[in-house]
Image (cartoon, rainbow, N blue to C red; front, side):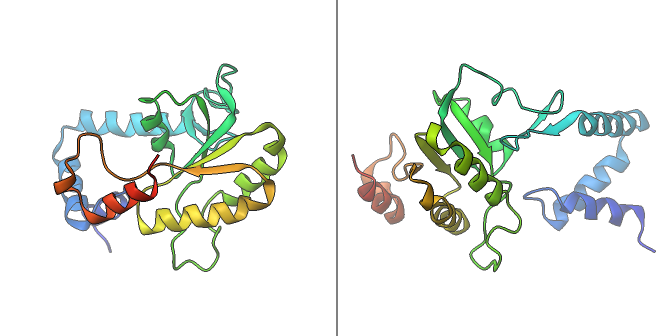
Amino acid sequence: MEDRIEQLTRLFLKFPGIGARQAKRFAYFILSQEESYVKNLASTLTTARAQAHTCTLCYKIFEGDPGLCNICSDTNRDNKKIAVVEKSTDIDAFSKTDYNGLFFVLGGLIPIVQKNIVANTKANALVERVKKESQNKTEIILAFPLTPNGDHTDSVIRELLAPYQIEISSLGRGLSVGTELEYADPASLEASLKKRE
């Protein structure tokens, strides 16, 4: 029978970016804490999960009453633009910019090797939303990570949305502000040349 340390380790392995060694360290950390800490952690997790909902329009995870999240229900936002992101946490990055449009959380990337291209994402829901709202939208911004799977997801979503005659853009890529050209990696420099203004 699997012991509790192994059970905890398996649970922590599901966390994004966590490997086996780090998962085991988390398990030992939890088991070495005072009982009050562990009870507080368990209670906080249970309460947070009970109060978390998925927005019925953009699929962002949020805390509050079921239905629309605070972004989708904000009438002051520019509802003509939708930024499509991989996960809810990506929306937080936009809060540091002057972007004032809406969002759509795809729920994952589409791996290059995946046969069913929309199996584990909300791609079909995105297509349905664009289909219904295309007359009122001016731009769909694809904001995926600059990785092979991010690039593949970008291509697939462009293809799925092509019939709806709406402008589709991707985040600019290339050199960071302050980068010296002599230290730039070739891929970033090439991307900068392609996206030059």
